[in-house]
Image (tube, rainbow, N blue to C red):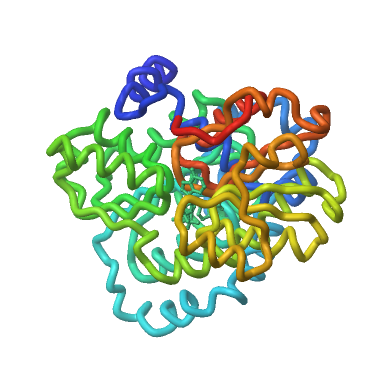
Amino acid sequence: QFADDMQEFTKFPTKTGRRSLSRSISQSSTDSYSSAASYTDSSDDEVSPREKQQTNSKGSSNFCVKNIKQAEFGRREIEIAEQDMSALISLRKRAQGEKPLAGAKIVGCTHITAQTAVLIETLCALGAQCRWSACNIYSTQNEVAAALAEAGVAVFAWKGESEDDFWWCIDRCVNVDGWQANMILDDGGDLTHWVYKKYPNVFKKIRGIVEESVTGVHRLYQLSKAGKLCVPAMNVNDSVTKQKFDNLYCCRESILDGLKRTTDVMFGGKQVVVCGYGEVGKGCCAALKALGAIVYVTEIDPICALQACMDGFRVVKLSEVIRQVDVVITCTGRDEKVVGEPWSRPRRSSHSQVGSLGGGGTSQPCVPRVFGGLLEPG
Ligand SMILES: NC(=O)c1ccc[n+]([C@@H]2O[C@H](COP(=O)([O-])OP(=O)(O)OC[C@H]3O[C@@H](n4cnc5c(N)ncnc54)[C@H](O)[C@@H]3O)[C@@H](O)[C@H]2O)c1
């Protein structure tokens, strides 16, 4: 039934039916691999969390996670994250007596990491009730999900969900007897559109949507243009602290983490072309340059192109370098793909890689298409 629902759901409003999940896969966070893997033994993997009967220490089973026994380790990770999230912690201290979010029933769908846990627990400390699922089938830190469940949060997520599990978890957050969400916090738009399509009466009563991703905002704009967005929505990317900090500095760190974990190769001396020199592109270029990579940049905006020059990068056309580079990174935020003849004969075809930190909503499908050449509108 969920597979059918999912198929029907993805017809709207995506251009390609599987975009929402593809996005989840494409942005498969690299941040959960080591910790989650180390705490997931093979016997754990044999049984789907959906089949397991688990309760937390208070006897609640209002959650579905990989293994509730991992909660203690997850708690330690959350505590480490709290040390770097002083704004939220001071907000808790200042406002938890007043409970300014009392009455807020928030349904969320984000990466479930230690950092998100700090956010969720802050919302709860301020009086909100939260139910949470993962926006990405791979990025959940199982032990963090366990810690949230142990703390009483209704969390439905584990690393390695199937498509069916993904929609099942979202539905478990929304479809609850005696509880109706009045706010949505989403990353990618899947939850929002699930509520919109499956529970229109709930959707009408939503008081506000917070959307974290460009992809999700794009989907909201589509709804809005069709005159169907009856709910106020906030684009997190409009926040200067998101754009100028997360996009730049976080990507500066995660680009190397992602490349290293997926390829396990050295980048000193490698030739890399970064498409787009916006915030994300600037972070990627800085990190790759620091590692000793030879970095080329493509840009369509003359100011950003000039900035790349002033920062010491060679600004090129993709067609000029595509046959000599080892790696292509797309950070344009557009729905584009690398196509065409030159890329079919890259200099070192067996080694060439493509990565997308922000190639638009359908960025992930560019990967199989890459053996073809130039960046063109997709
Ligand atoms: N993976 C992550 O963790 C992560 C984090 C933050 C943002 N993002 C995503 O990364 C994308 C880019 O974000 P940003 O803040 O850098 O946006 P931005 O608008 O600052 O930068 C995009 C740049 O790409 C350039 N560009 C557009 N089309 C191009 C083309 N065909 N060829 C070359 N250059 C082109 C634009 O001129 C612009 O300078 C967005 O989709 C964003 O959602 C990803």
